[in-house]
Length: 239
Image (cartoon, rainbow, N blue to C red; front, top):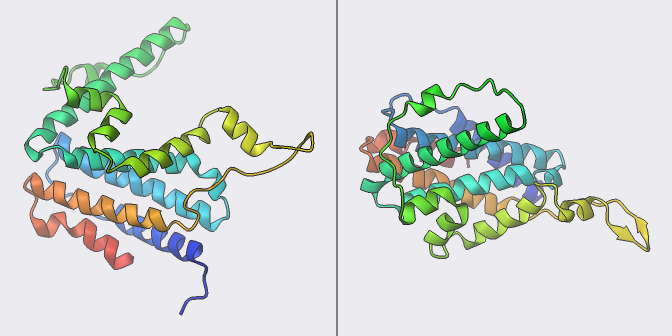
């Protein structure tokens, strides 16, 4: 029986699972915007999981808030996309792409207003023809993370709480300042931000949820079950 503490054990397991998922050859999955988003989000989540695990093993979990936040946001988006009827997901993905296009245009305008000549070529993005929602709940949910969370009707409340907590330690907030430089008896002291889920037990459960939802969505678009469930097999073999 291992003498490792639970945190180390879960971190090693998370790292092994991430490396298994990221090493998967999914070239047999037909490429479409929907499958790109499904698989791309999964890979992005496990890239963050790999970083979170490595930081935990290095004793640096207090510095992983940006990674945890990204991991949680991607996971919640996967959960949200899965909650949408299968025959509507492709259009919802196009709505997400349109929102990315809108935000990219805004960023380009802001840079131009500041006198910065951006080298980014937007022609490919502008040439995309999209069948996007322009109003309604799916449009709002694509635009706003909180709207997507609310659409899950409480299923993602815990994830949203964790996301909000780590958001405070990701940006230049007063919370992150005080966490690193607290006051003790009128003097500046040294401390580290609080670490939620320090043993990564919940993190392991969430990664299992990711591969399960991804496999289901791949099957929903017609991917052969043997190919779709390869992500689950890789995860649970390494678990």
